[in-house]
Length: 146
Length: 119
Image 1 (cartoon, chains in turn orange, brown):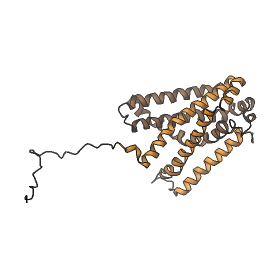
Image 2: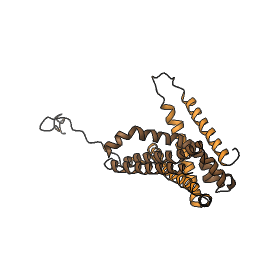
Image 3: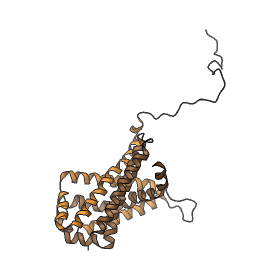
Image 4: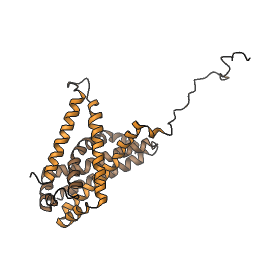
């Protein structure tokens, strides 16, 4: 039976600073559920960018006159546009739930003059504002008020 | 470019934060009616017939809201796409990608200002 290995058997010939392996990202980093949610949150940026340009197109058509406005509005009946707007709605709800429900309650300034509110209170205030503004926009745009 | 982006970071973050919060809050009702309700026949198209749509959009508050609906999502989108690009190993090309995305958002915002001015 072999004897015990010498504790310095694997030591480098010259003494130097300890070498550590450089950090490496695992190739499956994106597949962890937490990271997937984070990446989806970032990917909503593409949807928002396209939506901004779509509203720009509508505003431009509105400035051009009734014919252009009617054409732009009726083009939204295309199934591709409806599908895109459904995707936008899903993105908005996803961003809202993540940003308003999880991130913003934790982003309160601490150590300042204002008290740190319970997360549920912050969440309730922001969700409430979101619901009220959405209801107001729906009522105005659908012709119920004004 | 990277140096310029670092200098502009407070402005970019302000616009990104506004896009994330205000943009999300404003867009939800807009998408529900203009993007889904009217095209699917749930809301009458007369609600946004040209005279009424123009009346709603051409007053001061309407112009500000319309500009917010255009510009804020652009900045939220540009910044999030930039960070997504960095997540996928784009640290070395961040100056070019970030610069291009913010340029697109800036051009869209200027076009949005022009669009609401000429209403």
